[in-house]
Image (cartoon, rainbow, N blue to C red):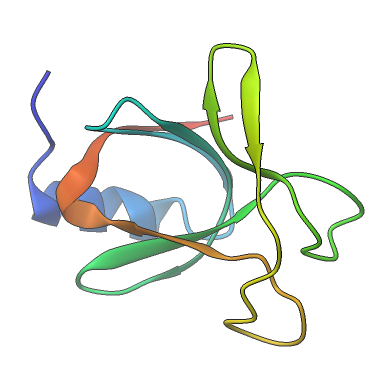
Length: 95
């Protein structure tokens, strides 16, 4: 499977802004979370997990394994926001 065109990824990410999504990337990772921002190069998601405080969650899922992340602090205190390059997206689905 090849990456989707950047303009297509940008359009879908904007269409799904504020919604819960599952994003597949070309490195085999699956990211789940809410799209909180989109720019010309990246989509930013807040992974699911915890009490929504951004104290950790599912940064990516591969089978049954989960990678836990800590707060990056992009917006606000202790916000866990994961930036994904639009160039690496294979598929985006609402969940």
